[in-house]
Amino acid sequence: KEEERQEALRQEEEERKMEAEREAVRQGIRDKAALEQPPEGSLT
Image 1 (cartoon, rainbow, N blue to C red):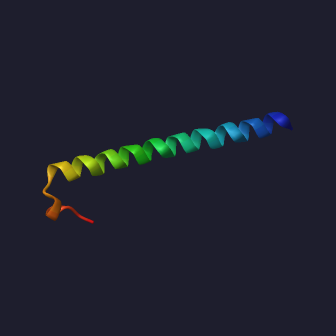
Image 2: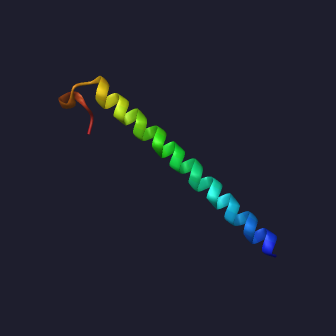
């Protein structure tokens, strides 16, 4: 069942990549929000 194992690994890799991209987007949104408002007004 080598193909199945390879497929599972590929799937995991895809999910990790998507999660990393989502995290990058969230980080970008946080950075943008931080720029748009004064530091004392930012939510922590």
